[in-house]
Image (cartoon, rainbow, N blue to C red; front, top):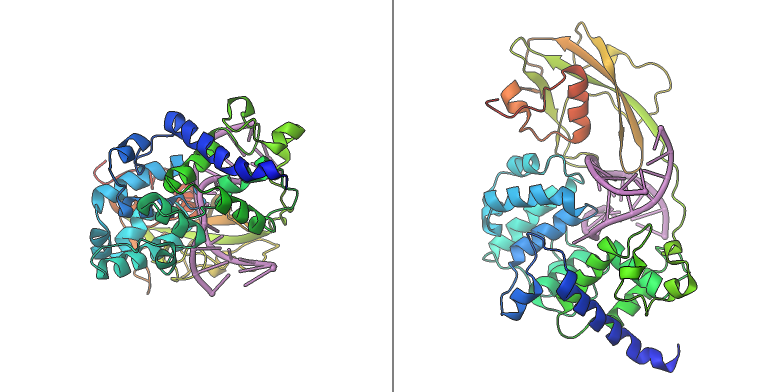
Length: 363
DNA sequence: AACCCGTGGAC
DNA sequence: TGTCCAAGGGT
């Protein structure tokens, strides 16, 4: 590394903060730099809640969930007092449902400490659902600690700035060292958010807007003319296809038969219509034999849904039925919308009863 | 370390 | 239509 590089990183951080002051995104969970300058501090509860929701999830997807959560549960103690099922219902559709289970577990622990979050990276790291990224993010944003925040945006920005040829995830150690050298002693939280804003709006994965970038003079990849090639990533394995069947039983009053999935694993703790297992590959036709009870099952179409590591094709069966099978419950048309139904289950119900999940109570 | 865990938007 | 991938964590 050339000697002049000693001063390079602080200068980059300073330019980034200057850009952030003028071009930062305004987000409901964020305290703007001007407010921080006036001495205002972020609410750790809102910072924590937003960071959990934002894990592998876009800002636009989070907005409505965040406002609904803080309106209903304004404090961590209020969230701790909530019923588990209510939290799962409110989280339905956002994905990665273990986040919701850990959210409640974390709220319980913090509420037991008087509703006060730990104010250090190490303290935060011990809480459920808070890993290396989230601990660093909360420590820096909410508590002004000079933590090295590393997420996908930071990895991309740093990889391009220093034109790192090592593929991810192997390069993470190297990237972390660079971030640690760059974090400023003052405004570490704004520095983290500035890097993430830059990655989200300028230093994007494809077609980065380098002409608008405050760091265009600092960027090794831009100087080499190939910023889009970074970060280098290993090829991803193909997604296997799994097949199965879903069974939509409809009562005379229009209620749909549901049950709760096991607490752990895929869609853990969420609600579903009865399904066959989908772990096994089904090469041939599905059949109503896998239904929770015998009935006049009729084919009602097929849906496809893509999960993180496999694609699922579900044959949909429908029947009219009036009974009370063990470990199942009926959900009336005005209740269905509020159930803890993952998107794949809403798709299955929609295929059998168009419009069934789209109407709120009273409509 | 490698695998599991959702969803929707952009291109 | 397919592919990528977003403020990652748990095991």
